[in-house]
Image (cartoon, rainbow, N blue to C red):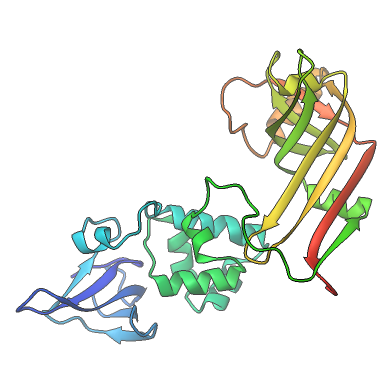
Length: 291
């Protein structure tokens, strides 16, 4: 018997084939993956040292099994998506792997495995991770990705406050996805999402000539970013207003392309850089009252 971190140890009745107990392998004692294993049992959430007997077998990550597939809710992402969401949320919270593992009561090695390899953690593991990251199990599973944010209940006593320029700059950060509001060639308003960077207090994004975002050039535009915390029913938004222009200086264009944090999600050749220099920067935040 050999196993990897994240595999399931399943104990079945030899007579009926019915599963009596199962758990997630969260610790190995031999490099070749042979027993014993540290197993976190799904029914008690306790970790024990296990020397598997003849009634036990290992369910490897990604291995097809009728019971596990039938028990997976429709729309649940494939193993691996969860780990990537955990890693993204951890970095967004500016948490190290060891601190996150400590909060979630698991080994840093297992968290590393979960983030970097296909894995299908137990519900108990997801609950602890969600709690450690201040989010929800549904978010880590990718639930609601096709729904607009903000469908949760409003706070009982919300407080809406204005943000100062420095806090707005901090929230804009250095890159992300924002929305630019323009007037198209036919005079109609349009709002489109773009991947953006912040360089020397100037917002820049890539597009193509003739596209909707390119209509920003030569006009004053509004550029907005926001974040909504569905679990806590709170969030913030920042609005930048200013003139937009094309970046034409070759050295600057090369520097922007070289240091860009991400390629445009829309794909394709998008080599036209547009800059927005804010002349007005405002923001608002919704929190529970007296926070």
